[in-house]
Image 1 (cartoon, rainbow, N blue to C red):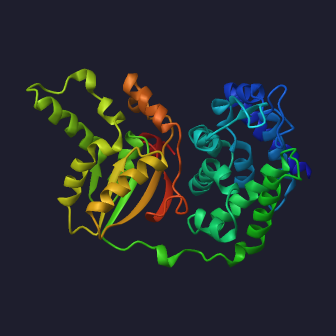
Image 2: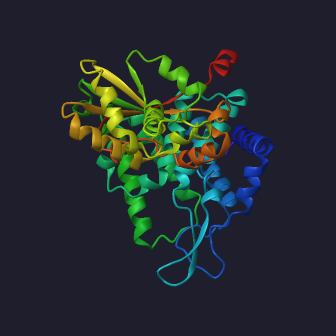
Image 3: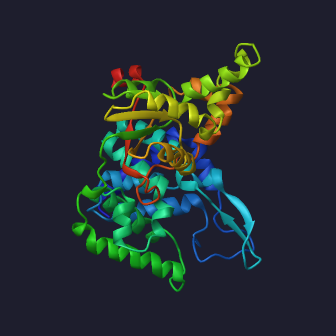
Length: 377
């Protein structure tokens, strides 16, 4: 590793410690190996140690970009919040980090947005890094390069970034190379590295045909409003439909919607308001594209809604755009008891991929900011 990379490592770690001291302390306190337990992975034990080894692996590759290095640094930000002590099948204690990828997306996003002021990283690179953070564990379970290409939404550059993170994650883990899991991971990595150049730039057979329903997912707030205002198609807001559902329920009792319920309707399940949502969509029949805006932060929420709508809108194709937004500007979204429920649901940001959600003809991720933040850039 040359002197320039040594200096970059120091700058990045200093910046992380200065801007996220609490997160750093949580990573230093989080163990990966339970006392008295055994695991074929992470004999380096601590989350902070692992992250530093993964960062080191990225820095040692001079062909890796700053985006790859940042991806290595932030990929396990969700581990401290998801650490759970469990008993394995062998009866020994083990620590799991279920869904730590999607749980770490918001923390990684906010840090990366701060990095834009001190380092050169683009919005598009931040979106790709967040995808890798959300999906890196799911990626490791794939069978080969064909699946991997489709998993990364047909984007060769995103597949290449995921493969580079995979390489660093394995290099930064003291693992048992004799396990089947390690052999499968290595086989996938070698397959992907050998065939990345052969992956087509897109999947023309998956490109959407109108009429198109595009799920626009993400936290409500000024940033989402600004993004929706930029769209050239009609927008059906799922939260407005849910509010109408609550108003109808109270109207049947002859009373207006109580103020204490303001916001709570947003925390109901997406399928509760699906029939009303279908009514709104049908009013717009004839439009080549309709945006259905809602939180829909998990695969289950999206797949359930897509399944319901597909049964009643046979000719419609589905697409998904996930709008990443900084925590700053989400104050209204996070306020009060209703906001706490919403934030909990939104914590796990399963960014869309065509392999896991085949109902979609297209999936992408964009970054939006509140208007005042965007104007100040």
